[in-house]
Length: 187
Image 1 (cartoon, rainbow, N blue to C red):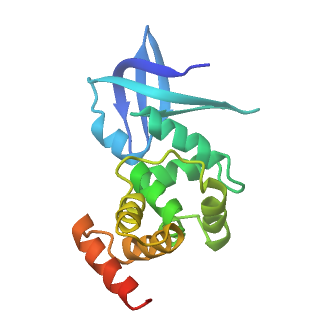
Image 2 (cartoon, one colour):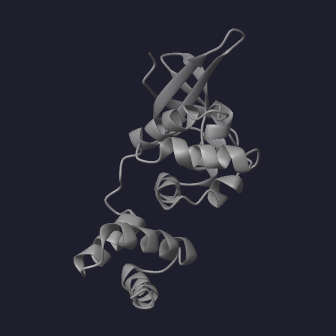
Image 3 (cartoon, helix red, strand yellow):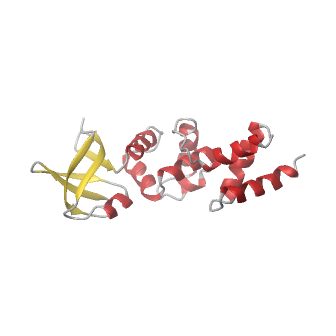
């Protein structure tokens, strides 16, 4: 039901856009980056999620199918409604969300207004192993590199999570050096 919307943007706000298709203007709630990218008069193609409620129908739109699927996964977490899921996607790109979940780093979710310690922890627990692993996942890439160098998979994964969390802007070769220094002290 209403899987996508294509039309001309007739109005744009901070958290929503109005997309007119076949003479019908649909108000679509979108992440901040999507609202910023869609200007009045431009054509929009959004992957959408329709949430019917007793008193209103809410339509949420995303530029990519991955973001739509992530929105749906976030909504499946206890305590995370559609507005909170949208706030998370407004503040964190999909890759960062996947990396935070993979690294068990709930502090990134706590930085989103309205998310406390309990909900952030629930997001990590609920989504672990349920998100598609991006080919460029930093934790996975580093753990794979360490495993290839002969380290045990469980130890490599633990060290990779710590290194990615502590060095979020570092390139893979730099992270490998830091991880090897850390592993060198564990022998």
